[in-house]
Image (cartoon, rainbow, N blue to C red; front, side, top):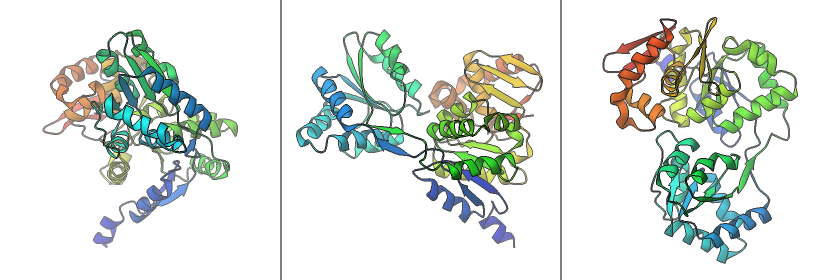
Length: 370
């Protein structure tokens, strides 16, 4: 019996899966661990953008002869090349552009797509955030540089700091996210969440979060979802960008892996489900990334950016020991800043004035104790 429990540590849990492209794969992985997965895609996945618009954007970029290219998604790189496939000369021109310019990639997926065509990115931020790509480019571009940015659903103004640094930014958006044609499975997932029939809802992209909120709003369920908050189910986010999107809509995250990968998310869900795991902890911190505030019981605490990010890193993993390397990566974008963590934690403790406890764990980092 003990071996069976070890092989199926999620037995008895019902987990909502909101993704589209790899939702079935995630569901199967959870079910192999003993969970019952409830599929309710809140996005239609990745859909090609208007091909004529993509070609027009591409020609404008090539004519400007960029010095930099920023690739924010792997699907974006592949979709960009696919959009030009009907015109071989244009497809070859994109590959040549990527080969001769200084290229930055937002994360591992974009890096993989670039390496598949022989391109090695100059910079990949450890947190895999658009904001970190923008911040790095802002420090490295020179006045007069031209930056081509391959986007997915992000507003063009995220690159305004790069423009303010004196560079011209041109964008191409080869694909987009959309709500599913049939929202019924997502609505059923929402109903099960509100009825207390789900223990976890998993989000693997910011787009899935936005779709979740949009569908809940369209069906007049969003107020109930927000009111239920953490008491309805634990919300799991694959990484910082997804967690921030959840929190931006007034919902708490209480499961998040140290690395933004689906496999790591499953392992973190398994830890949460253990008798000594995160499910023991009530969610007591409500984060607001727009205002940089933390609501704790009846108090709302305003925090400086660094202290806010430290708290967010811990609050998304209650009772979990979080290493200084992980904290440094998620706060400053680089594990080499680990030596700065103790001072930041000390300042955070002063700000929180004992409303929650942040404990040092010898050799393991810090943990948030409600």
